[in-house]
Length: 126
Image (cartoon, rainbow, N blue to C red; front, side):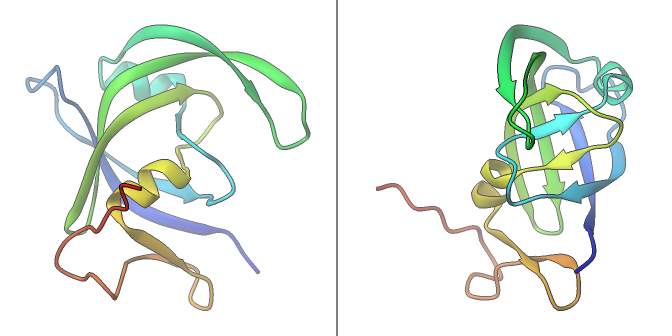
């Protein structure tokens, strides 16, 4: 099984004067949050809201900056969330994926809109 990437658009909701940033994001349903490289956060004019300690896949812990609000657009879906500043590429984790109601198509290694709800995102509230 290979890696899955998705073309997404990112914007800073507080800076409508800045252009959106289009990126190819690594899709990782095992990760929780959106992660952005510092360079992308800077392009978007995102400001650090706080610091947070996070656990990596190898169980080490690191402290990272948390920025917001960043909006993510994929096909006919969007969500607004916080992002962790970490890594060399954009990583799309489970929380924004669930909020947009998108799924990983493992067979074709791509991100897709949930076929059960093709026209709107369905969220669970309980």
